[in-house]
Length: 112
Image (cartoon, rainbow, N blue to C red; front, top):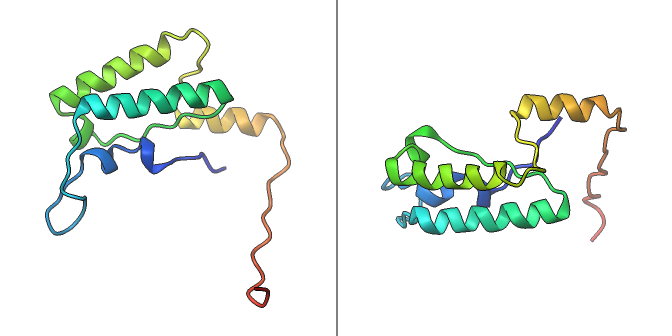
């Protein structure tokens, strides 16, 4: 079972900066990050999509970032029609649907 994730919903891209190791050197404002995640949530909700937010405690756990995350959680849970669950519960639910596995054909290296 693969749960879809995306870099736009990972706090690493927004907040991580380890000089010489990782990050662009630009640490985003929690306000900007909250707006980005909120817009993505609204769009995915409108499409019936799966919003999977990835947070690292040492990044999103800073006070201003945690406050922005709390605001986002309040928005998500305040919709009244959004299921908020651990990924294990989501995986169990999808497995219970007895969907056929999705298969992908690898590209043929001999075809241009």
